[in-house]
Image (cartoon, rainbow, N blue to C red):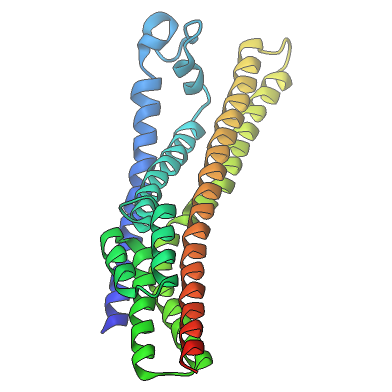
Length: 272
């Protein structure tokens, strides 16, 4: 039953992600067509004219039909970044994670497991949930009087299971962000190639080269290059940032688990 629910949740999540991607591409096309392509941004009041001096919206619009795709990719990076930030922040819990870990570590080392569980209930989030599971298991093995190694294996297994339940939610959509790193660059490169094709087409024309067409082709190539690099750069920054935060959360869980195991070993040592 749990697997069926998990598969349904995964399918629904994939559908929502697909809808977000389509909406971002559509929003990028709307921005390119109606905001960047607004006639007020161009000489003569029409988007077929030259951009007004210093009007960057019009300049980007002249990047051609690859621009709305790049705008959609940029919007995806922004949307999924906000979504990941919200999820990872919630996973860390309500209060400062370092302060919470310090409080829990102190309670565990002094053998006050109940206080540590209460702190986890107040903190909430993925880290607190995993640590709470390990603390409850600690109480169970303590009642059973297991040997240190058997208890350590049991507690570590409990932590691994709790972490495996929490991690998929933390890592969700990280693949999309990592993919956008490459897609931004490739889409920008595609726009660069199409722009250079137009530029060389102007040079290849019989007679005097069409200087306006040549300039437009080079401009389109450079605009797409800049937009693609910007999108990829932003995706790289947020991906590495969130990966670092996820590693920090995982390390916090492992650190608490080791403290719980060492506390139990100390407890068993005092019983001998």
